[in-house]
Image 1 (cartoon, rainbow, N blue to C red):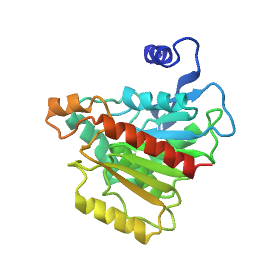
Image 2: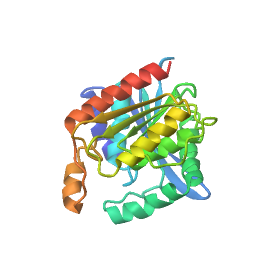
Image 3: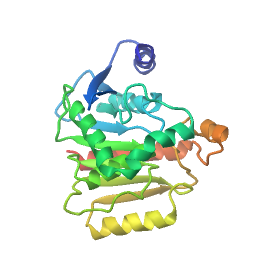
Length: 258
């Protein structure tokens, strides 16, 4: 962790430190969790917080790199640990085993998300009235379901996340929603997209759905092409979609979080 933080600081700042990077440990039912956060040195009234939920691999360097990117842009990035301290895997079989309980038990998933949310509130500079949650793949599903269950955030953004979650409850859904979906994502069938949009429309949700041409599952992660080839998975990195989806995310955050 210390080596990662030092390298990240040197990479981003060159000379002098402009971001604060650290980890925070907390406990849920006796199990240890370790979140990671990055924030600008200078916090203002306009500083927003972005909660980040990792892919099904666990809290590895990829979501941490997004937290650092967010801090570089002037906001606080806080990576929630959904699995527990040190639980990071590198193959689909182990990842599926870790992720499955979250897909099958929305209350369990929401509890882990909210535990991370509450830890984020303890970080100096975090304003509970200026929070957005984003998630990647597995994490996208987590933040969408959290919003449907009434998570106290201004907005949620799913990057190539699954859409076949719990039904929308218009009385609980308060957050604005942005879905950044790969048009060529084999894990998100058209039937799920149609049903998701239908439910959101019927609930009167503030929802924006964007498809990115030629983008597959995990299109934002630079390592996804390598991983896809290694495990024969239909995933790959798409630089154009990655760049545009981040622009769309920032536009969304600017418009939904004042």
